[in-house]
Image 1 (cartoon, one colour):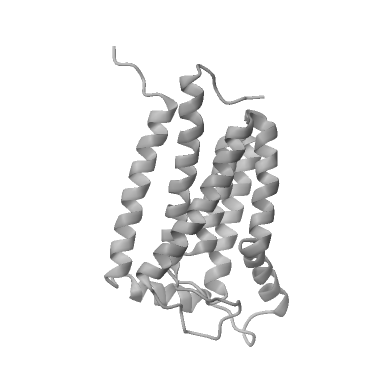
Image 2 (cartoon, helix red, strand yellow):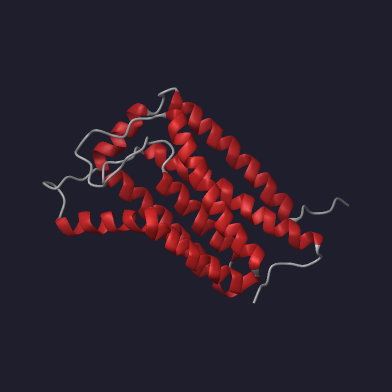
Length: 217
């Protein structure tokens, strides 16, 4: 009877599938095949100071502020301390390292693709780089998905709910503030998910070699 695949084998296969999907989305974006759809989505969601309540604009700007720059790295440091408490220094290193490398990869890919930002309305957030892939979406995916994978059993449901909330709110904020196309978000989320899977695989592979498992308390 064939043995069931190990957890790390499943994560490895998911990582390969996610990277392939990211490559496909990137090729489609580079070829301009989703430009029309991006235009339609942005036109439906984008906000302006004349059409949206000021409190809603401020809320979405706050969501974007949390997901980028110094606030993002402050959150990563705090979460690294949390996962260290949960399952040790290797988990903390995985979360911190995956976050840093994903951010670097996103920046390099932005320069490579050089995709212009949306210009439908004046931007409601400051931007200084190309559009694809979204750095905010990349960071949200890698940080919160990996946090959910590393969470002990009793916190896992809450961690996955947090991951879904942060990823979705980050996605909509960037489109609604007029600084990203929807496909930028899709690409960034896939990129971040790939690095989250890489971090989970790195932690799991070491645990399997040591004959142990992540703490499930």
